[in-house]
Length: 365
Image 1 (cartoon, one colour):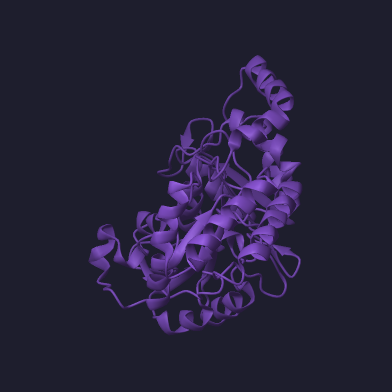
Image 2 (image 1 turned 120 degrees about the vertical axis):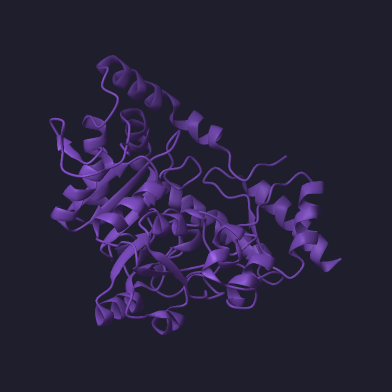
């Protein structure tokens, strides 16, 4: 079966440097919040042009701790998208706030900013946009709305490391930008990991306490915190990959362009709005014949995945929010029609052509 992502190919290309890095960490015997974490925080900070970065244990923790440090709490409402991974809404619920969903723009799969303002109430305290599949959300409009109503912005950048809008990197627009380093991400570790970037030193210090059991050190605990520390091994691996992230993203864009050239007349291919730099964490097409197409690809030995088959407002775990089918029609339509195809920097041209031929034969037949 041709995989969605081949992590071994990437590993083999950087194996010597990875093993040298790991050996250095093992020899140092320092495994948590050491020099590699500090160096990674500095380099991610510099890459995004921000003044603070805090490494944490996962992308989910990044969202959770950012919201908590920014003062989002029980009784507050947070507007977000229904078309994203479940962690986005989990983080909102972890701080006791209520998720409020605004529908998506089917062109980009990002939150439709025309729908956001009508969801604002006197309890709204924040907006959590997600840069879906690697295409930046409309941060200009989101910042306008947040400024008008004095709302916090926490960007979910789990899928968008290196993406930008008018030259500005995602994660640097709002009050905090939250990244996941899950292995399959554009910048992926060999386990879980995450990071929060921001331009607010007091909030950054609060996040550092929260990630470390509410302590700034010395076994003095100023509040209740969590165990969410990025470890040295993951930070070391990420440092090796970070120096290559722009090249990895360039190659993803190259693969996406090849797919689009072959498929654009048959399915709805991803688009890139003016000023946006899409990094194609996923290459996601849309067709009303999605299920038949996915079955055909499977029969021919090509992997594909539906991200996401059930929008969040219709998830059983969130029934208590009171949404019903038909409330957010664009997200519901996307869930029925999207299909993500194999996408990674080392993906071969022949593999792209083979996948495209299967799709064309299936949908034209």
